[in-house]
Each structure stands twice: as C-alpha cells, then as structure tokens.
Image (cartoon, rainbow, N blue to C red):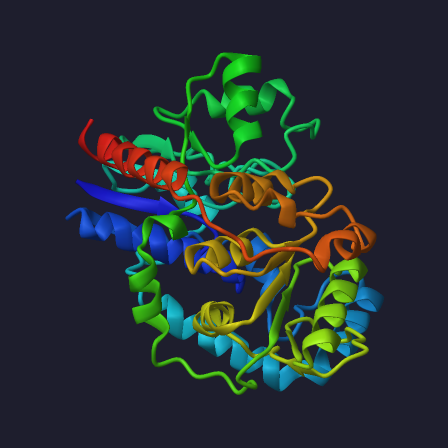
Length: 365
C-alpha cells in the first residue's frame, strides 16, 4: 500500500527533519511503499529562509535583513547541510495546498505527524493539509502528533474536535494530550513515542560516525529554541567549574566563559554534538530525546512554561525528573550533589513496542 507522510520536513529545524527521517526509515524497514508527501507550506518554509523574504512591512523586513546578514555564510552552510540530509528521504513531487484540495493525492494511507503538525499556532491557524482535509480515498491517521499547549483556546474549540474526529486513527506524543482527548472528549487515541526513539542507538551512531565538527574534545552542549537566560547561567557555571567550553547555536548570546558558536550545524552535526558532549543543557524536546537515546549521564533542563510537558514526558519515562529545574537557583541548590543519571528502560521498551505495533496496525487495517 502506498503510504504518505505529511510533516514539517522542509523546516530547517533539527527536530523536524530528524523525526521525519526516523519515521520514514522505520516504515521503510517494514517493507512499506512510503514517501514523504512534499507539501510546500509557505508559513513553515519562510521562517527558515537564508535571506528573509520581502514582506509588506518593509521596516520589519529591513530589520530582519540587518539582523541575519552578519551570519549569512553560516546560515547558508547550515541550509545546505539540511538539504543534503533531506536527500536521505524519498519524497513525492511538490504539492501545494490548492493542488491537494483540488486534485487530492494518490495514497492508500497518509500519516500526519510526528511533530506539532496539529498545533494551529505553528501553522498560522488550522491547516487543512496537516489535518488531511482534502480529496482522496486514503485512510487518515496521525502518528505521535503534538498538540502544543492543550489549554490553548483553539484546541479547546469545537473546530478542533471536529477536525480530530475526522481521523481514522489518532496517535499523540504527550501524556497531557492523550488525557485531554480521551478523558475530556472521549476520543480514542494511542500515546506513541516520537519517531526518533524507534531507531536504535546503534543506528544513530552509525549514521553520524563519519560526521566531523570543529569543536574541542570536551564541551558543554547548550541548545534552546527560545532564548533562556537561566539555561545560559547553568551552562556557564558548569563550563567554569570543569574548565571546558560551551558549544552553542544561537547568535548574539553573551557567554561569560569560553565558548564555540556552531551556527552552521546541520542535523547530522546536531546529533553528533549531543553524542560527544560532556553535559547537555537544554529546554528542547529533541535535544532531550537524543540525550536519552545516547544515555548521557549529565543533563540539565529548564522546560518551557507552556510546552514543557513534552520534555517532562521523556524525563519521566527514563527516570531523570530531578534534572528538570524551574530556574537557575533550583539548579545551584542540587548541582553539587547530583550523581550520574541511572536510566530506566522498562517503560521505554514497552512504549517503543506499543508504538511499533500501532504503526503495523495502521499499515494493515
């Protein structure tokens, strides 16, 4: 059966392309005729342009241009690395919203997800394509879709409930999303792992074994999507104590310690840097996910106030909830006496098998 995946594969975002690669790879190994439906969503792609696209607000465009131009060469190299990584994934011909709504798509099954494809705040409102609301005789499913903040009024609306009940099968990623659908609305759903967890650690290591990054042998890995000064303080504290640098990704961060900027890192470099780091300091779901996959012994997290449940779900599964802090002061109080993380794997292995079983189910029903 021909199967399509609809996700944020064109975003130059580490988690977006790595989860896409993982889901595609897992389905491919199940002897599934699978490809990523190359839906070109301007609201997603425009956020990751090497040079900001001109917009109606000329002053805003000039401001963005001045802000990004000093990092043009690094942004260009980063984009090229994302493009090379996408070559590992089989994709359809490009589709646009108008085409899909008019002509549909020739698949027996389409899977929406993983990632925040159902979060209307990411897609500038409810996107019909990610909700598979277009012509075709295909079965409609999600896999490990993330809703974002379940208390958001848009997700509490009748429109969301109407859209989510239109799927034949529903699988979500977070505990709170699962409870929200089942307990509050009686919607049958599965709770599934992010696709990155479905690939063995050995396979991830093999993928990046020849990837080189120009960083010192020992370093602190600092990564967040939204700037967080508390995480910066944590990274600086560890760096000064261990006398090793901080590797960071966001430009214009002021670090009061030795540091290395990796603004040109692509998906392979991102995974490799986590694999080899002494310590991980992050608020990111996928940075936490890969830290867990590689069983990193020293992780420090400040979860996002609204979407932190995604990170918390990983910590709970592997048993390092004590590495999530509300602020820098909470970190300082416990840091000196923390032992290395001892990973629990029973729940992970159980959820992994359940997630694989769900994929097998939707492929054969």
